Amino acid sequence: MSPSASLLIMGAVAIVLAVGGLVLSAVLGPGRKTRTKLGTYECGLDPNVHEDARGRFPIKYYLIAMTFIVFDVEMVFLYPFAVSIGHFGQVMAIPVLIDILLFIVLVLVPYIYEWRRGGLDY
Image (tube, rainbow, N blue to C red):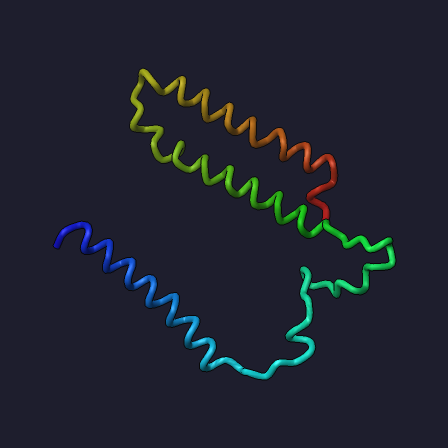
């Protein structure tokens, strides 16, 4: 079997699973539409409760979520360094180690800033 055929089969299986899940959810799921189910949902809070402060809505939840995403993505970029460090050999080990340490410092600086600012307190 060619590599293209296996890729096409895997793509077809993924599409069938995705569409099948949506169809099964629509067929087997409850069809009752209630007022609560159709209402707006914002991070577990009723959006109408917080309108007393000139229409502002607390965004603390979203700031923490964005902080998590930023640091999570940065750690995903650190994983290939850890896996491939042995493949560089003795000659390139020091420059690669310097790059890794620089990356870690670049991750720690915003983390410390966020911590000191109180962005991680929820």
